[in-house]
Length: 170
Image (tube, rainbow, N blue to C red; front, side, top):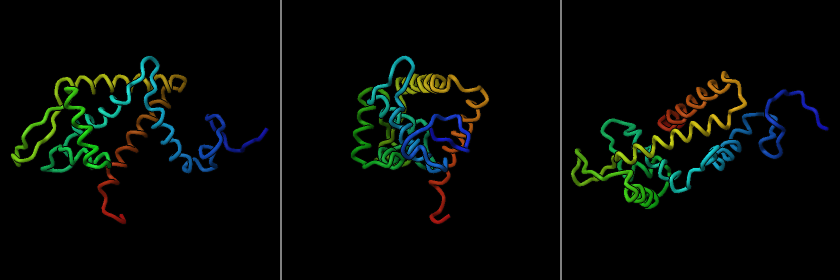
């Protein structure tokens, strides 16, 4: 049996997650998290709905800069996908009744995306699902650790958004 001088509450792992430096294990951990993201104690979310929520979240978040409107191009940029892929994703959300197209108030030739009532309801249901999954996954954690992890995860995500807008080489 191998012993370690480093104390951890995480079970021992093989491969990249067993890295001596926890920072080396972050990337592989995010990959595993993404693959397991549909986990729920009661009902899993369909892949189609997971994809739809990516688009709906972008539309709900709205512009990142003054004068920006949410278009298929913005969806493509934020998801880092080809515009044709984003267009298919948006069309699926429109067909499902979650989004509506509207004329831009800045440029009548451009089409913008807006949430429908059904889209708002779907996103609210998905967020309830996410919370239930988080509570299920962390059910054995002390409440203080749950809250600390939630705060740090939100801080991390905010930092990712800030880094995206930082000048190159900064």
